[in-house]
Length: 62
Image (tube, rainbow, N blue to C red; front, top):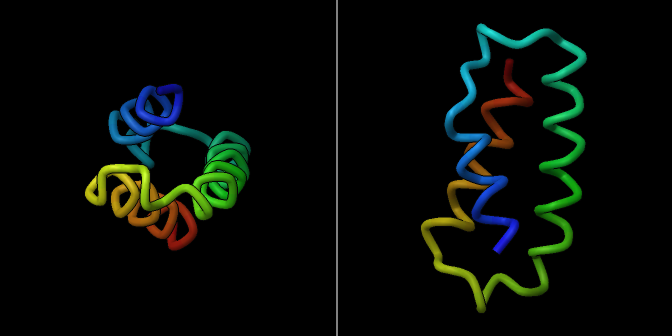
C-alpha cells in the first residue's frame, strides 16, 4: 500500500511551496509510479488511479 501513502503525500503538497527541483523529482517519481501501476490498474481503486494521473498532469503544467 505504499502507493496510497505516496498519493496521500502528493495530494498534501502545494505547488507554490516547493522549489523547481523538488517539483521535478515529484514528477519523476510520479511518472515511475504511474508506469508501474499502469499494468495493475484493474487492481486499484479507480479514483486513486485517476488521482495519481491528475496530480501528475498538474505538476507538469506548473
